[in-house]
Image (cartoon, rainbow, N blue to C red):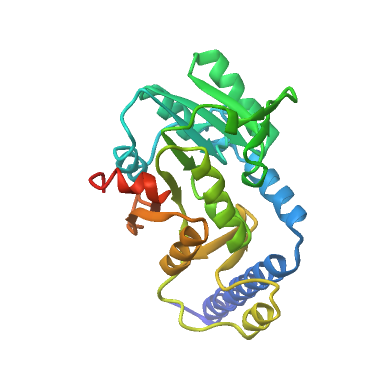
Length: 283
């Protein structure tokens, strides 16, 4: 039977929900402020630090995630069959790279975090996987570096059969123009399709916070820009944005999956027009 002390305890528990609401508001405010005001250098450094310190991306850690997701298995089925070469950007510790190597592809993978790139190189050396590891960002293409500091110009190499943005790394590029430039940079190195997974804009978001609208009007951020302490800066893209960026890169969209159900992630494929014209049947 409940007495006055029981009801008091129940009210105290109920009142603690205010802390949850305060934390939610703080998280939203932090996302707005950081995505609007933090410099490119700060956001890049934070993303490198956040991913470099996460064990599932570190190929030397027991928690390393080393398998393709369901949607990636479906996506890889649209690659040209092995043997062939694949370029993977934002590769982390090499989850996609090692799986593609195991399927018969020769992989070149690059990653901005030296910690993760080192773990990827060590795993490749230990397993004999056909994975060449380079360090750099999309904006550095086509010139990247080895972990030992040697400069590698990928434009002097034979073209890749396909190119892949590592899991959602496309969405971690801050500006639309830079995302388009990254698409164009990968496409110039590939005689095939460029694939990217992305954070999809939330269709159920019908209201915009006044501060969000104000920062967007001042050009400090775009609708869809977000920040999370776990994964750093990311952008949620509408399909119309994706198409605009593909067009700005001089490419055409040749594949799209909007499936974001359990175990799946939205992704698209783009290609230079001459590549798309000779591959009409791969879906």
